[in-house]
Image (cartoon, rainbow, N blue to C red):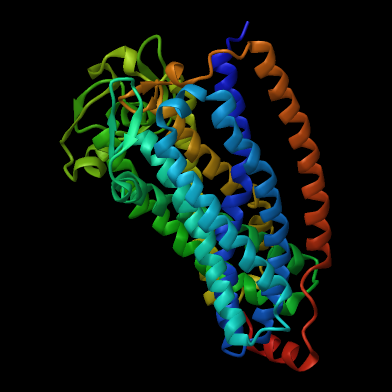
Length: 452
């Protein structure tokens, strides 16, 4: 029989993972739409046409993010009432800021961007696209600050009743963990937006539809995607890994599959963690690389899991290990695919290289998988802590909700989100099938003449 704590965790993991499919796309698309509007302001008519098309997809995805995000925030009270009771005055600050400042800013300017193009001047409409980007990315920052307090609590005191009190709002908002995590998370969202845009452009080019506009915004998405893929590894991925090593060394050892302390530690590329024998089965290891990447020394000592009390080990090391390696492995593939696409773009052959267009089109799901795996790494690795070093996960869960009640709501979310998935897929495929509007013939001739 599953206990209620496990069901609380599974339900929150499911609803959070499903919800994040949508914000990661809108946060990435917000930057790309702003770039398209900037190109449109400089006289490129195709960019305005592309921006209108992607705003429709952005709007649909934004609505889905709102619908799936509201139940997620309520679950703090239903599933994690002891956490809210203790830390509500702290976590409520950033969650309220996300709703009041960022969400309303985002939704208001999205309306103006979609419906106000004919009523606003080109410069003002461009300015609205920047404000949409600002609101979208602010929303992400406030949520990251909330999570960062759980990962690395700062700016608080605990009274004699175990209640947490905020001592510095500035400390909460400038949490060094949040700053590095935010940069890495937003880079991941830009990768998602870029690959989605590249995939849809490749789809239209393979069908030889909307060629004039698709080949142009494919260029934008490939350049941005290649840049973001590099930044995701270095420096943001490196910063994130080093702060995990500094503040959560047990998580670092577990996600790397590093069981025993050693000098000149190698990096595991492939293998399966064996917890019975505390080793990696069938490993492919690059010697000394983990030491070098961690301490900039080929022979530096890297502590293994066995150096720490086993009660502090994450409770699902296998899932943590595979989540991290899926994220890192896909990140390497993203660099290779976008790098190859950039090379073919430079040669002027990308829009006619059908095998590469097929790869771009089929790559659509993988950034979503990588970002989800990244969040699994962050959250599973924090266990057994809900607030790292202060509150165990079991101590923050709701105590008066039976297993049956949690299972009932979990099944309800599964069914509801299945219906929402079908609805989103139906509406999104209709938008994609319709594609961007046609350029006026003069502009189409110019776009064709410019090439890719």
